[in-house]
Image 1 (cartoon, rainbow, N blue to C red):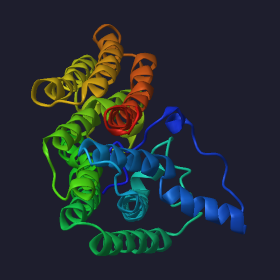
Image 2: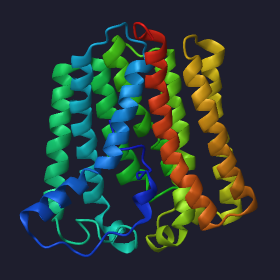
Image 3: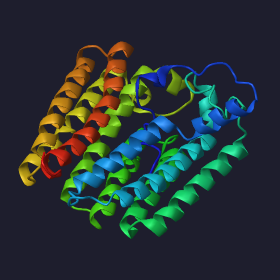
Length: 318
Protein backbone atom coordinates (compact mmCIF):
# COMPACT_ATOMS: atom_id res chain seq x y z
CA UNK A 1 0.00 0.00 0.00
CA UNK A 2 1.38 3.38 -0.87
CA UNK A 3 1.20 6.62 0.93
CA UNK A 4 -0.94 7.84 -1.77
CA UNK A 5 -1.73 7.62 -5.34
CA UNK A 6 1.75 9.05 -6.54
CA UNK A 7 0.35 12.52 -6.85
CA UNK A 8 1.09 12.62 -3.98
CA UNK A 9 -0.94 15.47 -2.38
CA UNK A 10 -4.68 15.89 -2.12
CA UNK A 11 -6.93 18.69 -0.88
CA UNK A 12 -7.07 22.45 -0.88
CA UNK A 13 -4.19 22.95 1.57
CA UNK A 14 -1.57 21.47 -0.74
CA UNK A 15 -0.52 24.79 -2.24
CA UNK A 16 0.06 26.55 1.06
CA UNK A 17 3.72 26.97 1.79
CA UNK A 18 4.99 25.63 5.05
CA UNK A 19 5.49 28.16 7.80
CA UNK A 20 8.79 29.25 9.31
CA UNK A 21 11.13 26.71 10.80
CA UNK A 22 9.88 25.34 14.10
CA UNK A 23 11.99 25.39 17.24
CA UNK A 24 13.47 22.04 18.28
CA UNK A 25 11.08 21.44 21.17
CA UNK A 26 9.43 18.07 21.63
CA UNK A 27 5.93 18.95 20.31
CA UNK A 28 7.43 20.58 17.22
CA UNK A 29 9.70 17.61 16.62
CA UNK A 30 6.74 15.24 16.91
CA UNK A 31 4.78 17.35 14.42
CA UNK A 32 7.68 17.18 11.98
CA UNK A 33 7.89 13.40 12.23
CA UNK A 34 4.13 13.20 11.82
CA UNK A 35 4.44 15.36 8.70
CA UNK A 36 6.82 12.77 7.26
CA UNK A 37 3.95 10.27 7.23
CA UNK A 38 1.63 12.59 5.24
CA UNK A 39 -1.36 11.89 7.53
CA UNK A 40 -3.93 13.49 5.22
CA UNK A 41 -2.82 11.39 2.28
CA UNK A 42 -2.58 8.27 4.41
CA UNK A 43 -6.16 8.92 5.51
CA UNK A 44 -7.32 8.99 1.88
CA UNK A 45 -5.37 5.78 1.23
CA UNK A 46 -7.17 4.09 4.10
CA UNK A 47 -10.56 5.33 2.88
CA UNK A 48 -9.91 3.63 -0.47
CA UNK A 49 -8.88 0.45 1.36
CA UNK A 50 -12.24 0.55 3.15
CA UNK A 51 -13.97 1.15 -0.19
CA UNK A 52 -12.22 -1.90 -1.63
CA UNK A 53 -13.31 -3.91 1.41
CA UNK A 54 -16.95 -3.10 0.80
CA UNK A 55 -16.65 -3.32 -2.99
CA UNK A 56 -15.86 -6.99 -2.45
CA UNK A 57 -19.43 -7.29 -1.08
CA UNK A 58 -18.72 -9.00 2.23
CA UNK A 59 -21.68 -10.74 3.81
CA UNK A 60 -23.39 -9.19 6.81
CA UNK A 61 -21.97 -8.82 9.36
CA UNK A 62 -18.57 -8.08 7.87
CA UNK A 63 -15.41 -8.97 9.75
CA UNK A 64 -14.82 -5.74 11.60
CA UNK A 65 -11.65 -7.13 13.20
CA UNK A 66 -10.19 -7.87 9.77
CA UNK A 67 -11.03 -4.34 8.68
CA UNK A 68 -9.23 -2.88 11.70
CA UNK A 69 -6.21 -5.09 11.00
CA UNK A 70 -6.20 -3.88 7.40
CA UNK A 71 -6.26 -0.25 8.50
CA UNK A 72 -3.44 -0.70 11.02
CA UNK A 73 -1.12 -2.66 8.72
CA UNK A 74 -1.95 -0.61 5.65
CA UNK A 75 -1.71 2.68 7.51
CA UNK A 76 1.76 1.87 8.85
CA UNK A 77 2.99 0.78 5.41
CA UNK A 78 1.53 3.91 3.82
CA UNK A 79 3.13 6.16 6.45
CA UNK A 80 6.47 4.44 5.93
CA UNK A 81 6.32 4.92 2.16
CA UNK A 82 5.57 8.61 2.69
CA UNK A 83 8.60 9.02 4.95
CA UNK A 84 10.82 7.29 2.38
CA UNK A 85 9.50 9.68 -0.26
CA UNK A 86 10.44 12.63 1.98
CA UNK A 87 13.90 11.14 2.46
CA UNK A 88 14.68 10.46 -1.20
CA UNK A 89 13.14 13.66 -2.62
CA UNK A 90 14.82 16.03 -0.18
CA UNK A 91 17.01 17.58 -2.89
CA UNK A 92 14.05 18.12 -5.23
CA UNK A 93 11.91 19.47 -2.38
CA UNK A 94 14.60 22.03 -1.58
CA UNK A 95 14.34 23.48 -5.10
CA UNK A 96 10.54 23.90 -5.03
CA UNK A 97 8.83 26.79 -3.26
CA UNK A 98 5.94 24.58 -2.20
CA UNK A 99 8.09 21.92 -0.53
CA UNK A 100 11.32 23.58 0.58
CA UNK A 101 10.04 24.04 4.14
CA UNK A 102 9.25 20.36 4.59
CA UNK A 103 11.03 18.83 7.60
CA UNK A 104 13.95 17.20 5.76
CA UNK A 105 14.98 19.95 3.28
CA UNK A 106 14.48 22.53 6.04
CA UNK A 107 16.83 20.43 8.24
CA UNK A 108 14.35 20.05 11.07
CA UNK A 109 14.61 16.28 10.57
CA UNK A 110 17.83 14.70 9.37
CA UNK A 111 17.85 12.47 6.27
CA UNK A 112 18.94 9.51 8.38
CA UNK A 113 16.01 10.06 10.73
CA UNK A 114 13.52 10.12 7.86
CA UNK A 115 15.10 7.00 6.37
CA UNK A 116 14.93 5.11 9.66
CA UNK A 117 11.30 6.12 10.22
CA UNK A 118 10.37 5.08 6.67
CA UNK A 119 12.06 1.68 6.90
CA UNK A 120 10.71 0.97 10.39
CA UNK A 121 7.09 1.86 9.60
CA UNK A 122 7.14 0.04 6.27
CA UNK A 123 8.67 -3.09 7.80
CA UNK A 124 6.19 -3.02 10.69
CA UNK A 125 3.24 -2.59 8.34
CA UNK A 126 4.44 -5.39 6.08
CA UNK A 127 5.05 -7.70 9.03
CA UNK A 128 1.59 -7.15 10.49
CA UNK A 129 0.03 -7.61 7.06
CA UNK A 130 1.87 -10.90 6.61
CA UNK A 131 0.68 -12.16 10.00
CA UNK A 132 -2.87 -10.79 10.06
CA UNK A 133 -4.06 -10.60 6.46
CA UNK A 134 -4.50 -12.96 3.51
CA UNK A 135 -1.47 -13.36 1.27
CA UNK A 136 -3.19 -11.43 -1.55
CA UNK A 137 -3.66 -8.43 0.76
CA UNK A 138 -0.03 -8.55 1.89
CA UNK A 139 1.14 -8.65 -1.73
CA UNK A 140 -1.05 -5.66 -2.61
CA UNK A 141 0.27 -3.63 0.31
CA UNK A 142 3.90 -4.55 -0.35
CA UNK A 143 3.69 -3.99 -4.09
CA UNK A 144 2.03 -0.60 -3.55
CA UNK A 145 4.94 0.51 -1.38
CA UNK A 146 7.53 -0.83 -3.82
CA UNK A 147 5.90 0.85 -6.81
CA UNK A 148 5.51 4.19 -5.04
CA UNK A 149 9.01 4.30 -3.57
CA UNK A 150 11.05 2.21 -5.98
CA UNK A 151 9.37 2.56 -9.35
CA UNK A 152 7.85 6.04 -9.11
CA UNK A 153 9.97 8.04 -6.65
CA UNK A 154 13.41 6.59 -7.34
CA UNK A 155 13.24 5.39 -10.94
CA UNK A 156 10.63 7.22 -13.03
CA UNK A 157 9.89 10.58 -11.40
CA UNK A 158 13.08 12.26 -12.62
CA UNK A 159 13.27 10.46 -15.97
CA UNK A 160 9.97 10.50 -17.86
CA UNK A 161 6.71 12.39 -18.20
CA UNK A 162 4.90 9.05 -17.88
CA UNK A 163 6.06 8.65 -14.29
CA UNK A 164 2.65 9.34 -12.80
CA UNK A 165 0.88 7.00 -15.21
CA UNK A 166 3.03 3.99 -14.38
CA UNK A 167 3.17 4.91 -10.71
CA UNK A 168 -0.62 5.12 -10.59
CA UNK A 169 -0.74 1.46 -9.60
CA UNK A 170 0.35 2.47 -6.11
CA UNK A 171 -2.97 4.27 -5.62
CA UNK A 172 -4.90 1.17 -6.71
CA UNK A 173 -3.15 -1.17 -4.29
CA UNK A 174 -5.22 -0.18 -1.19
CA UNK A 175 -8.44 -1.09 -3.02
CA UNK A 176 -7.07 -4.51 -3.94
CA UNK A 177 -5.83 -5.09 -0.40
CA UNK A 178 -9.23 -4.24 1.05
CA UNK A 179 -10.97 -6.61 -1.34
CA UNK A 180 -8.61 -9.46 -0.49
CA UNK A 181 -9.24 -8.97 3.24
CA UNK A 182 -13.03 -8.93 2.79
CA UNK A 183 -13.43 -11.86 0.42
CA UNK A 184 -10.16 -13.76 0.42
CA UNK A 185 -9.79 -13.02 -3.28
CA UNK A 186 -10.05 -10.06 -5.65
CA UNK A 187 -13.26 -10.05 -7.71
CA UNK A 188 -14.40 -7.89 -10.62
CA UNK A 189 -16.02 -5.05 -8.66
CA UNK A 190 -12.90 -4.07 -6.66
CA UNK A 191 -10.78 -4.47 -9.81
CA UNK A 192 -12.99 -1.89 -11.52
CA UNK A 193 -12.74 0.38 -8.49
CA UNK A 194 -8.95 -0.02 -8.50
CA UNK A 195 -8.94 0.81 -12.22
CA UNK A 196 -10.90 3.97 -11.46
CA UNK A 197 -8.28 5.03 -8.91
CA UNK A 198 -5.51 4.22 -11.40
CA UNK A 199 -7.15 6.40 -14.07
CA UNK A 200 -7.80 9.18 -11.53
CA UNK A 201 -4.12 9.66 -10.77
CA UNK A 202 -3.04 11.42 -14.02
CA UNK A 203 -5.74 14.13 -14.14
CA UNK A 204 -5.34 14.71 -10.41
CA UNK A 205 -1.57 15.12 -10.53
CA UNK A 206 -1.33 16.82 -13.93
CA UNK A 207 -3.79 19.47 -12.73
CA UNK A 208 -1.44 20.18 -9.83
CA UNK A 209 1.54 20.22 -12.21
CA UNK A 210 -0.20 22.84 -14.36
CA UNK A 211 -0.57 25.03 -11.29
CA UNK A 212 3.05 24.48 -10.24
CA UNK A 213 4.61 24.28 -13.70
CA UNK A 214 7.38 26.76 -12.83
CA UNK A 215 8.16 24.92 -9.60
CA UNK A 216 8.53 21.59 -11.36
CA UNK A 217 10.63 23.17 -14.10
CA UNK A 218 12.91 24.69 -11.46
CA UNK A 219 13.32 21.25 -9.91
CA UNK A 220 14.05 19.78 -13.37
CA UNK A 221 11.23 17.24 -13.11
CA UNK A 222 9.76 16.13 -16.48
CA UNK A 223 6.11 16.36 -15.52
CA UNK A 224 3.69 16.56 -18.43
CA UNK A 225 3.07 20.33 -18.26
CA UNK A 226 6.85 20.90 -18.17
CA UNK A 227 7.59 18.54 -21.07
CA UNK A 228 4.63 19.81 -23.18
CA UNK A 229 3.27 23.26 -23.86
CA UNK A 230 0.33 24.30 -21.63
CA UNK A 231 -2.34 23.99 -24.36
CA UNK A 232 -1.44 20.39 -25.21
CA UNK A 233 -1.16 19.61 -21.51
CA UNK A 234 -4.65 20.96 -20.89
CA UNK A 235 -6.04 18.71 -23.61
CA UNK A 236 -4.25 15.70 -22.14
CA UNK A 237 -5.59 16.40 -18.68
CA UNK A 238 -9.15 16.68 -20.01
CA UNK A 239 -8.85 13.46 -22.02
CA UNK A 240 -7.46 11.58 -19.03
CA UNK A 241 -10.38 12.80 -16.93
CA UNK A 242 -12.90 11.44 -19.42
CA UNK A 243 -11.40 7.98 -19.02
CA UNK A 244 -12.72 7.92 -15.45
CA UNK A 245 -16.20 7.38 -16.81
CA UNK A 246 -15.26 4.00 -18.32
CA UNK A 247 -14.87 1.93 -15.12
CA UNK A 248 -17.80 3.82 -13.62
CA UNK A 249 -20.09 2.77 -16.46
CA UNK A 250 -18.72 -0.76 -16.31
CA UNK A 251 -20.41 -1.17 -12.93
CA UNK A 252 -23.74 -0.70 -14.66
CA UNK A 253 -22.93 -3.06 -17.52
CA UNK A 254 -21.49 -6.09 -15.74
CA UNK A 255 -22.46 -5.85 -12.07
CA UNK A 256 -25.60 -5.68 -9.99
CA UNK A 257 -26.27 -4.17 -6.57
CA UNK A 258 -24.12 -1.12 -7.31
CA UNK A 259 -26.85 1.20 -8.54
CA UNK A 260 -26.47 3.81 -5.82
CA UNK A 261 -22.70 3.87 -6.25
CA UNK A 262 -23.13 4.25 -10.00
CA UNK A 263 -25.44 7.23 -9.59
CA UNK A 264 -23.15 9.00 -7.16
CA UNK A 265 -20.02 8.20 -9.16
CA UNK A 266 -21.56 9.49 -12.38
CA UNK A 267 -22.49 12.79 -10.74
CA UNK A 268 -18.95 13.17 -9.43
CA UNK A 269 -17.40 12.11 -12.74
CA UNK A 270 -19.46 14.50 -14.85
CA UNK A 271 -18.70 17.36 -12.46
CA UNK A 272 -14.97 16.56 -12.60
CA UNK A 273 -15.02 16.33 -16.41
CA UNK A 274 -16.81 19.67 -16.54
CA UNK A 275 -14.08 21.34 -14.51
CA UNK A 276 -11.37 19.74 -16.64
CA UNK A 277 -13.15 20.93 -19.79
CA UNK A 278 -12.35 24.45 -18.65
CA UNK A 279 -8.70 23.68 -19.47
CA UNK A 280 -9.63 23.42 -23.15
CA UNK A 281 -10.49 27.12 -23.14
CA UNK A 282 -8.21 28.51 -20.47
CA UNK A 283 -5.05 26.76 -19.29
CA UNK A 284 -4.58 29.16 -16.40
CA UNK A 285 -3.46 28.31 -12.89
CA UNK A 286 -6.85 29.38 -11.57
CA UNK A 287 -8.74 26.84 -13.70
CA UNK A 288 -6.19 24.10 -13.04
CA UNK A 289 -6.33 24.77 -9.31
CA UNK A 290 -10.11 24.35 -9.24
CA UNK A 291 -9.79 21.04 -11.07
CA UNK A 292 -7.04 19.85 -8.76
CA UNK A 293 -8.93 20.69 -5.58
CA UNK A 294 -12.07 18.98 -6.84
CA UNK A 295 -10.07 15.89 -7.83
CA UNK A 296 -9.28 15.23 -4.18
CA UNK A 297 -12.91 15.57 -3.18
CA UNK A 298 -13.86 13.41 -6.15
CA UNK A 299 -11.82 10.45 -4.89
CA UNK A 300 -13.07 10.91 -1.33
CA UNK A 301 -16.61 10.96 -2.72
CA UNK A 302 -15.97 7.75 -4.65
CA UNK A 303 -14.79 6.01 -1.49
CA UNK A 304 -17.74 7.21 0.55
CA UNK A 305 -20.15 6.29 -2.27
CA UNK A 306 -18.96 2.68 -2.22
CA UNK A 307 -19.46 2.43 1.56
CA UNK A 308 -22.91 4.03 1.29
CA UNK A 309 -23.79 1.62 -1.52
CA UNK A 310 -22.92 -1.36 0.70
CA UNK A 311 -24.96 0.04 3.59
CA UNK A 312 -27.95 0.56 1.30
CA UNK A 313 -27.94 -2.92 -0.18
CA UNK A 314 -26.52 -5.06 2.64
CA UNK A 315 -27.23 -3.53 6.03
CA UNK A 316 -30.26 -5.22 7.65
CA UNK A 317 -33.36 -3.05 7.76
CA UNK A 318 -32.00 -0.44 5.37
